[in-house]
Length: 154
Ligand code: UDP
Ligand code: MG
Image (cartoon, rainbow, N blue to C red; front, top):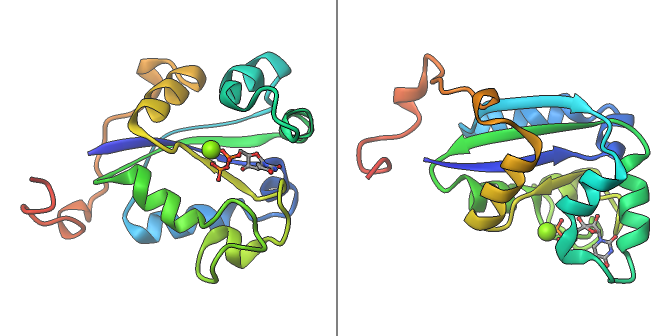
């Protein structure tokens, strides 16, 4: 099992898309193990986006992400990081394939609805940035044994 940090960005919240996006992950079989609805301040955003500091879009990105509340979540599943990135689609809505979250819901470059960790190292760092260890809940949905077979679980 792997965990990934997902943020439904201010545009997803303001456009009333939170439920529809979360439904896609639930439908896929990913399990919500932590969630918090909050506004992100500049220092937290600077830590979260530290790898992008100095890039031309950085200032605009931090301004956008702090403008309005976001839904921060941890999702769990086998290969959750890759599965979620595939479901999100390419970074810019205009490039993202239909059937992906960004492809179906957006046309913008920066207003692209969702963040998802891009590696196990990033996931570990990002989850620790937004949640204390005891805020990530170990649980399994009732139907879980019909989502993965023994081979999937290695
Ligand atoms: N972004 C932007 N302009 C760019 C590249 C990125 O506004 O030219 C924003 C966009 O919101 C993106 C975020 O910065 O989601 C982080 O960029 P990254 O390359 O990590 O894309 P992601 O991993 O989110 O697909
Ligand atoms: Mg990224």
